[in-house]
Length: 404
View 1: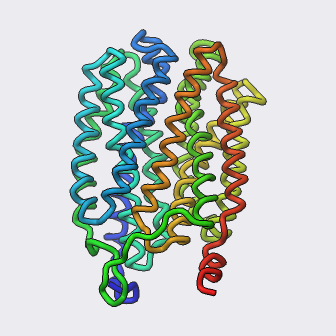
View 2: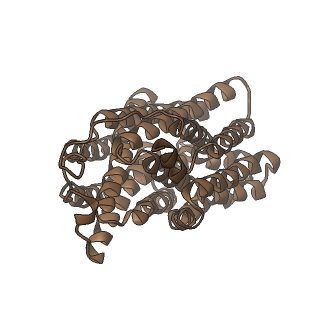
View 3: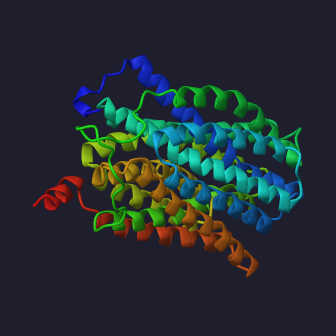
């Protein structure tokens, strides 16, 4: 269907679609993935895990995220997403329920692997599906708002961990996430699989668009930049509360408060970076985003104190979702007909570098290193991302060169 003939949607319909997407990201990211971050200090204190085992379990989850993103590269058509999305959300719900019954490290790692696979597929397919739907309605500028669900999910997960902390222990601490996931996942999944979209991208003459190259002079620096983002942000997003617990006195408000600050900073971040991308251009906004995020990761290295932890929480929490939405939108602008396939490829690379972060941290800790030293790796990775972001061409310039 030509873009010029696409129907415009009523505000209520736009809101419900964006809300459904935000809820699914809240569920798989907030209640599936990142709830593990505020849970980890409690699981360590309960004796269920050591810090090193906690890093290992996180790595299995990130491996699953990588596998899920790779599967999304294969199954990226609209009709395939409609089949995969309900399956992925069912896997999320079942694995989260099983985590309430499992204490041993090995089966917990297996469950986190399966949960990560579901998360990876959903995190690729949901924003990509909604972006395609918005583009057909000439409303692509709203696409970043779906990532509000990530920030709300972080705050929600913090509450689900800290509020019942006094009367739950060990594997029981997963129960709040499991119970809230069920109704949220059911409604939002049903809303998105019924979206009015053509089963495959088509040209104006009605022919199906074939797959193009994913890697070229425009996309390679974007991929390399995104790899730095994945490794750079995952260390504070996994270990910041644990770092606070090791550096601060028992009962200090920043042990739990660091994650709350991350969540509070993350909630408005998609709105802010969506607006900055529109004002500055997605490329310039991405460079600014990397610089702020680099400063946040470096803060706990320079100031290993409450001030450093606060700066890290706010600056990283307020930028990481912006990195995702700006990179995804910039990538699609460079390759307009790649759609969900391009998104899946970038998320797969992002997932690989995220998986490397906890694994490298475990090796570092087992060798006698400190968490502060591990955060240095994150700052270096974000500096890498900033450098390569500079070399990403503006889509307008790239397409002008391509046609001459």
